[in-house]
Each structure stands twice: as C-alpha cells, then as structure tokens.
Image (cartoon, rainbow, N blue to C red; front, side, top):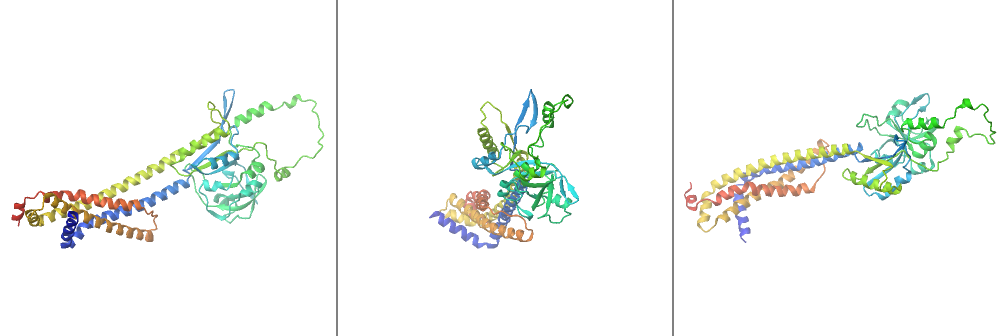
Length: 458
C-alpha cells in the first residue's frame, strides 16, 4: 500500500511540471535512442563484415595428403596418396561441426578456344559442393554441373570472369566448347567475379569441372604440385641405359594400340582412386577447432593409424582470418559500449541536475510532509520513484525514437540492420539503473532535510 501511495504522489508531482519532466527525460530519450540505433547498426555491420570475411574463406579447412620419405630424405607435403572421395563422404556425414565438404583434383595446362589460348591459374576438379564451400553460390550466367556429371565424368565446366575476358572478349561463353589439354569441355556456367584473395591471387582465373573428368581425362596423374625431385629420383632409378641394349627384342602387337582420343573417350579408372586434397567448411568460425579435431580423429580411424603413428595427412585452417574477424568484432563492440556509456552518463547527469532543482523548490513541501509524520525513508522513496519513472518513460520513448531513426537509415542509406531483442531489454534495464544511480543523491539529500529548517525555507 505504501508503494502504491508513493507512486501516486510521485506521479502527481511529475504532472505538476510537465515541461520540466519532458526536458528532464530528453537526455535519456536521446541517449537510449542513440544506444538502440548504434547497437542495431553495429550488429548489422558486424554481420556484414562476418559475411564478407566468410566469403573470403575464413571457415574453410584444407586437408592435404601426407609426406613420404625415403632414406631420411623427405619428398615434401602431398607426396603420398592418402585421401579418397570416400573420405569426403565420411567427413560430411560423421563430423557434426562440418557443414560441407568437396574433393579437389588440381591441374594446370593450356586452354584453347578458336585461335586464342590461356593458361588458367586454377583448374579445379571437384563437386558442386565446392561452390558452397567457397561461398560462390551465385552464378553470373548458366547453371552448375550436377552430381550426375561427376559420376559420369562428363566434360562440362564453369569458367571465371578472367577467362571470359581473355578468351571470349567479354561475351557469354555458355554453350561453347573449349579444349583443356586437347580434351573438349562444354561451358555450362560462368562464375561471378570474386577478385583477388588475401595473397593477391586472381580468384577469377579459374575453371571448375567434375573431378572425375579432370582426373581421368585431363591430368591422368595426381598432385601436380608435388616435390619434383622425388619424381626425378624415381625416374632416374628405373631408366635403362639404351646404349647397352645392343640387340633389342621386337614384340609383335597382336592388338592395335589405343589412340589418345580413344583413351580420353573411354577412361579406365585406377584401382585406388585418390584426390589431391579436400576442402571442408565449418558451420561457424567458432567451431573451426572442433571441426579440425573431428576431421583428424575420423581420418586416423579410416586410415587405420595406430596411436604411435603420425598422421598421413595434414589439416590447415584459416586461423589468421578468424583472429581478424574476432578483433574487428571486439573493436566494434567496445566502440559501441563507449558511445552508449557517454550518452547515458549525459542523460543521467541531466536527471540528477533537475532532481536537485526539484528538491530545492519543494523544500517546504518536504518539511510539511515530515512535520505530519513522514519519515526519511518515505521522502527518499518518493524522489527515487520519481527519478526511476522519468528514466523509464525516457527509455521507452528512446526505444521508439531509435527505431524510427533506424527505419530512416534503412530507407535513405540502405545500411544493413540487425534487430536485437536483447538490446531492447537491456535498454529498459539500463534506464532503471540510471534512474536509481543518478536519482539516489537528490533523494538522499531530500530525506536528510531538517523539518524545522525546511518549513522556514523561502
């Protein structure tokens, strides 16, 4: 009952000076509106930055084959064939932290169309999931090849914007055929422009095709980026000196030798099908370490590695890019907190100032209430309730004004906005806290007045 009466007295006191109450809440209104606007715009900017960094590959995890060694000599990373397409299927099915995965077969050779030729920086044999892993889902023209094309090793491909510019003079190449190492490929789609990556490599200088077609029709070998010294050593040890072969034996071929065209048209898969590397994507930047652990454990189990045996593969992630995103998010969050703190402090100082003026003006009223039996805690409660009510009204109006400003920002500036319910709840809580903190001293000062001195006050 006392709380209800206190609320009633506080509301009557505020209604006596509506203009002063409005001006008192103006600081809180502006402060809360600024907080809401900054939090929403900041959340939208953070989401946009995250999307931009993710498009650069911050969630990507690269899995490479292991390293072979002989006689204490290492042949370099990727010199042993350990990764298979079945590993890709197992990773996406049994690793919850992995969102998508794609096998990679690499090649680098000349591409010919008419009287023009070009050597793309990337010739990637993969599956349609590669575009999801690289956040390249939108095509400039055409369509993506399918899983059926991968199973049948169909000669279809996607090309980047650099090839469109260099070979086709900017015209649409969809439906046309190019030759990759004298194997004809039909262009079914054109990738959107992606620009250079963080290391300055042109990401648009690329051809993407089914990995089966690249492996069995184009490259015919694995790992074109392996240490060449190992290949040279092996070939030198197996070559025979032709000068010693004074009487070479001649063998009669019972069947005609298969031509290169026939071999390309009817590829014979090898018994052990391997891929050059595997590209995986974690479901979030925070889950990259978890995804790496899950992938490592799964591949060790699949490759039958004992506890004391080293990994026959290597897993690499984009740790530096993840750190960049984390630092950018932390910097933006701290900036917004500083702006919010300054705005609320200004509004709180305004409330304290007006409440002190109100205590001075109502000194006789306070003395009269004390004279008829009101205790110090009743006076303290009354002025504290007035300050809290003022801050709550200002907070609600500030939230409304903040969303009106956000609506104008969306219409006029087209900035990304991300609505946050916790920001609204936090604004209400902060409004009450500001009322309690900055309204306590005027209320305490009012409760400490001497009744006799207060009644004599003019």
